[in-house]
Length: 323
Image (cartoon, rainbow, N blue to C red; front, side):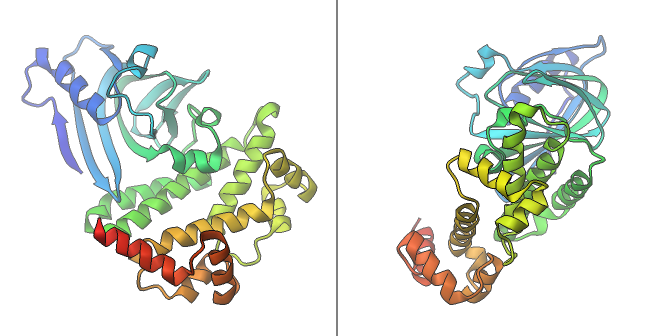
């Protein structure tokens, strides 16, 4: 990571203002104030990997909040959610009527559409990752369901997620662009799985059905390659009866099988349009997306997109070159 900002060498009276300008440009406009009497001291390191911005903040004694006024600021970002993982120290946070004190290894999602407050009492280091909103909401549902919810660092999937992201930060600058983009996709999938694992704990009854569906969809995303994946398999993995899972999908205007095939075809289309998969044979790509044969894949794909997989790949890659 490269240093974007440091208070070293900055006059004490100018440190906080300089910090605020850089910090808000990197994240979102916020109301900020120091909590201690000592001169403000902070650093910001950042790197972009696979199209995502990773930012490490090191600071002490700070309170920051987004408010109705800052949410209306012209520089406010609404198309991203921010994953905030504590690396060192503790961070107290409030959002969506959820209050928590996060410690090293914990993470939470900040929704840029609703106010939040964070407090750094003492020294802390935090890794922030700007994730496209649709990458999380497309699987887990509206951000209000999970934003502000602390995902404990001791949970199994969270441990794996933290390890993967740490390794990605260390090796990201050595990866070709198309490989880095795919690895970032894996990292986001792990974040989704961590959130789904946490949301399954002590869920209020009114949103229980939504969480079950979100867990089911997260499982589908992680197991699209499995040709045995079907509604019965999914119900068993989610821990509910097949009838109950069908009811929950029907309440949302969906059928389980249709959703599985929708996601398989969508992922296949994304890979066909990705230069990083240009050398992958169509049969291999089909099997990796859960199709039993290339012929079955071609038929279903043409029904959905109006082109054969080969023609779709050719057109998508030609358009990418033209741009």
